Image (cartoon, rainbow, N blue to C red):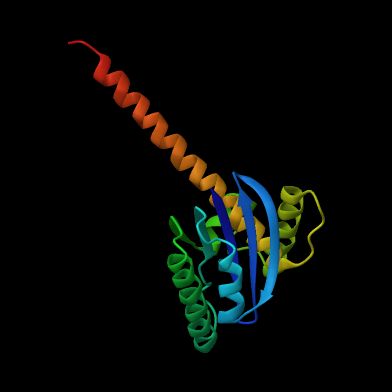
Length: 167
């Protein structure tokens, strides 16, 4: 199962791909439908989860509208290419839980921490903040899916134990 982390912008799409919970590769492409479609062509007949960052809401209205359109295009392509699940992750959620920084931190602090964490995930220095965010979003989604799976297993075990009790 692949997990694809995506940090979209109006100029570029950054993607990080994880294969069986391990980092596989990352890429940054110019933002266009054709380029995004070429990227998703690599997932034909593959099981994958698509995790895309939601938008910060403190942007000017025109930028926010463009970003919503971009995210809609990417999530639609993910669905067309049969993504098993699409996760729209608020930036504050992954940054606070994963990086330990939130909206109270400066953008520079958040991006510096993102590059640091992403570099440790891929075992290589990452200085591109879009790639770094995509790697962190992808790894966060991998961990999120693992946590959901663990919670499901735990609840299943509790149910089985309960069913085995004799009253």
